[in-house]
Image (cartoon, rainbow, N blue to C red; front, side, top):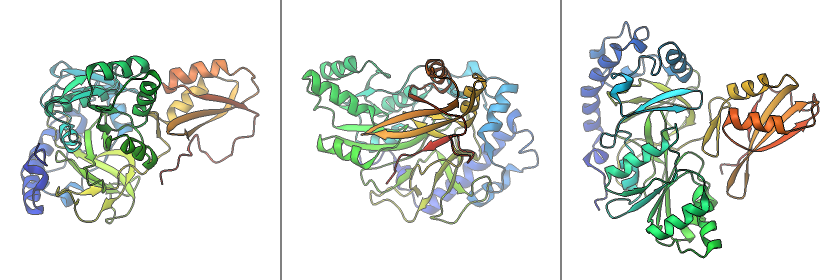
Length: 407
């Protein structure tokens, strides 16, 4: 297997700049012709947008604007160059927000990450990302096809069946959230099943804590992570050097001061803003709401694109628990369903190597069951419900409290 997915990964700065000068004007011209950008790009001359500096003069597109446009012009809000029927898939993520998908080779650009993980022809990937409504399962399956690997479309849950399938089929690689592989391995140990053929893991959708990565390494599994979203696909990824995340060749990443579109100096923490060069879905300066920072220099592995530190939290209170985003508006929806509840706070924690979720609810009620049912329906997660007396939660405006340590 070649060290690199293609020659794009080792381009010089001049070569990368020349490529941007060629593709950016065409991308902006395509976006300007779409209803979703009719107002924001109305006065923009696409021929003038030729580099990162001129790109930074364009307005930022926020997810709230995208969801509002989708509500008015379903399903994609006028931001795609194809109608819904022109795509192979239409996905729904929590919000709800809708994303398009295609089965074109490496449409989500995940093959680059899987190649960096050492996954390719001859491998069988147990894909434990969800295939139901949300796109993560198809994103990683599309990437596996791009590198010539076979896929076990396992999805989530049914851990005993997952462990047995991995053993019987001879799975060699895992794709999924960081902590679910441990659940499968522990179940296999309990069942006396040998999963030692799994030697690589490609993870995303949650924090990969150093202790968990080391536990996998102790079992002979090299675990690397990528930073990806349902809207954009792969944004940045680790290589075997494990020295920051390398920005994918199909996107332009900027780090801006939160709440603005102004780029911050190299090394300063700010909000991740991404422009996708995907002409089917040309998202221009899309604000992810995630925090990160640019690392100086290039990766020791020889890939030359910009590197970022990876996910460093949220610019707002939105956080990811067990691979699912939990947003303040969902907490508001939960409260709206229960007039007897005054306030609520979602607490993200860790129990060993697993994410935990506790929902504290200020109420005079004594039965947590109705709240638990609403939490599962609204947040799409299950967790502990603590009913606390009125006035006991801190008056700090916080509805989501991430208490996990990322050190």
